[in-house]
Length: 119
Image 1 (cartoon, rainbow, N blue to C red):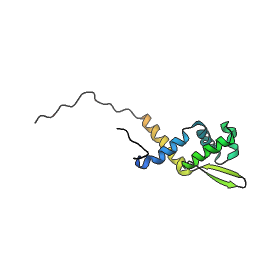
Image 2 (cartoon, helix red, strand yellow; image 1 turned 90 degrees about the vertical axis):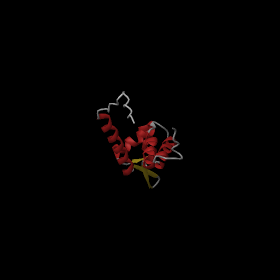
Image 3 (cartoon, one colour; image 1 turned 90 degrees about the horizontal axis):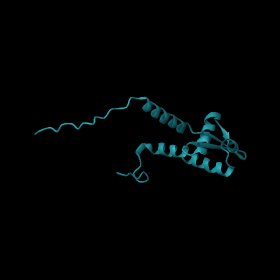
């Protein structure tokens, strides 16, 4: 069965999907990493860490803002960005969940079919 997430959604997981889609692109992931290490960064400083032009940085910041991953604050002519605490916590929780799952022993699935009950 194919599920169209645009129509059906995944109940509470929609924010997870938006966040993961937003950070799945290498430039956006670099932006998120810089924000995670520096706390707050001027939009003009992302061109150095990402190796892309200012218009490209602006596009990626817009995608991250719309997904709720970052927020910006105007200070004069500059905009300073920071990670949104809820999004950072959700990314950390997803990472922890995946890490814990990878460390568990896999469940063994029986290859024999159960006997049918006779009437």
